[in-house]
Length: 192
Image (tube, rainbow, N blue to C red; front, side, top):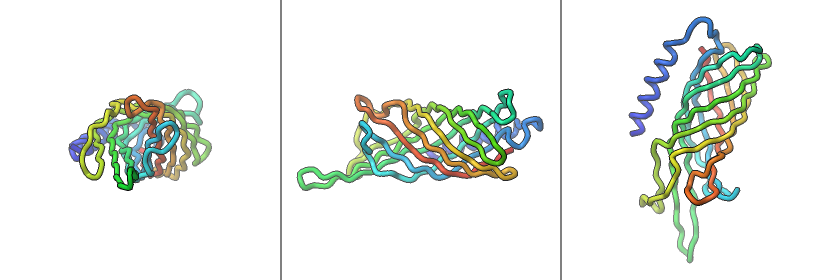
């Protein structure tokens, strides 16, 4: 399933890139990918230790009247993972949660020279995932929708960039709990 999802995302990205017009310039569209550290918190307490993953996606920047402001929209794939070891009656249990999402971020980008800041909202659909305790898969009622707010900074040089952003979850992802996803992303950007 993961291969099919990544393959589909690559096909969509190539179609997106092929429609780039000269008037968009070097800030018009691009691809971003990188490392992600994520966890899930219940009532503000981390349910899992931070886990490493990745994200990949594409975006389009739309002019909104003022040259330093742009509205970024896009499509991204990312994983939220978490692991934690618990002790109960002198027995240790290892729980692992891995969720796969397709995300639609919308952000306002403010560009001052090569540096830009961005902030916005995103909605994500869960396309897969599993929850295991000591390697055995367990049913967990996980929401198919997640939403978040993010803030970030980036720097652009020619057609390349580096950006970092943090996302705070706004929706309970595990049913009947106050559980939110949080993640930090840092990665490379290729502008077209």
